[in-house]
Image (tube, helix red, strand yellow):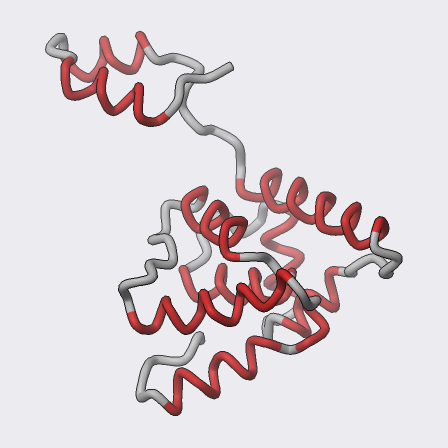
Length: 159
């Protein structure tokens, strides 16, 4: 089991023997899972949950449709051909997969993109619409509604 982030931060601020020593000391604690593996794991969990609720499997072509992405982009993310998508592409993927805010932020953090932050007006709107997935599914087309609200408020849409 790896070290928790807070413990690593505390050790890092106290460590005086250089970065090489710190990296060696914490070998195995760094997040090295590829994006495609993370996406596949989340995808499997979503479909297990959907099955338990009596819903059909969410296919990748539907993720593309619901997230306003091309199928090529979605498949390249899942198969590892594209491993550094921009933040908006990941947010669209979150909408396509129907991810709740916690899972969406996990995915953004995993890709070293800024988490959705409640004190940022644009992010707040996005969080509001992602929160709707706690009671709805990706089929609800919440990305379109979210972009409509962002536009109405004069904020950048999710491109």
